[in-house]
Image (cartoon, rainbow, N blue to C red):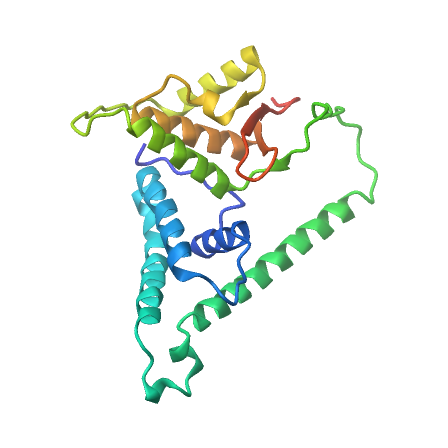
Length: 242
């Protein structure tokens, strides 16, 4: 799996992960609790290192920056630094970068929404009628970081039953995992995220299934939704796919 990589439109790198954590915790972006955010950020990076060490390298620079800021905030400010806002609060530069990143991301979202609205102004050829969502469920699209966090929780729970000396090699192609997931969804219907991994205990197999889920999302074969923050994640097969 070392040569396999999933690219998703919703992935934008380290700043995207940091902004996701700030929004999830409902934190004031101008007053970031560095210690708590750094701990959560590093937890996500450890999961990324397991999935793709090369990809995780992009996140380690920001992790080092967060740790440096955390260290500087623990040190007393000298009198010479009293007139320098950035030296008094080492978070200033990070907040500035986050605000700029957020502005560009929000602008990109506005442009995408405007393009979607504009595309509805012109007649199009009839398409297959999409099936309505199952009644009684108010679901929202799941962020990529929600999936990684759920996968990290899954790995933690499974890891409690594995011995450190156990070494298992698994070269199962991603396509086989994709076929397995689609087959199960076709036979058993909609499933929860945890049901996809039920009965699997080996790390390589779990990683393969997780990468297969990301690839199916990229191909538009399945949707991943959640009832509420931190709630159960559901996996649906899209209808009308070729």
